[in-house]
Image 1 (tube, rainbow, N blue to C red):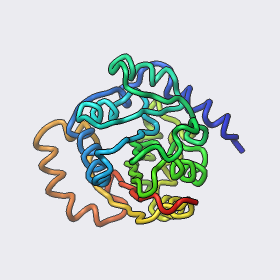
Image 2: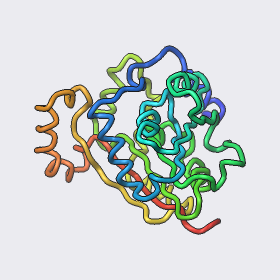
Image 3: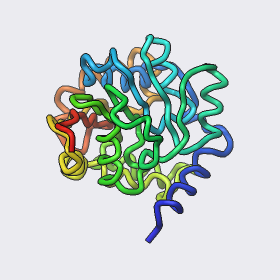
Amino acid sequence: MTTAEEHNAYQRAYYGGAPRPAIAPVDTPYVRRHLEAVLAALGHARRGRILEVGAGEGRYTLLLHALGSDVTASDLSAPLLARLQARAPGLPTVVGDVLDLPRASLAAFDAVVGFFVLHHLHDLSAGFAALHRLLKPGGRAVFCEPNGLNPLFYLQILLSPRMTWRGDGGVRHMRPGVVERGMRAAGFVDVRTARFGLFPGMLLKNALGRRLEAALEPSLTRLPVCPAFQLFSASRGPRR
């Protein structure tokens, strides 16, 4: 079995080499949709201190920062965070695994958010326990993830030359039963899952694609295999 150290080393190499268009900072309707869904789920916590885990080069971090959010970016990869800081000098960053962030981070944040990061964690249970400790009592955690029941993501891994099963295969765990159980075991309360979206980003670049998705989404997102994305949200319960 792969150890946490081996897993993290692979993830650093997987994303920390040459720049990837798939994670480069862009501002598109597709990216905005994810950001707006997370912000809505945060509620009042969006106005507090936010930690973004798995921030990478800052695709979402920079948008949060531009909106005036008090956001700190964390990631396993120092090179990725260096690219983020080159675009936003002075934005606070923390390099490291969520399991080993500095003690000063404990109970320091009103919100923890992540965009497509949970399926890259080595151990979901340990990850949720660590994330719970980073939040202030009553703080919110919200994560946007691929729908693990949608077969198109597995086809994407198969056909994309820069994707591997070892790097992205954790998408198979992105199912409500698995994620919600892990969050509750870590002490989170008010655990919820919401599904949204149908189309990949390239189909949402024009108004026709966006209108078509809006028309089909109310009916098709009721089918577990159809939605492209899921939003997992919860609050920190009492101190443990």
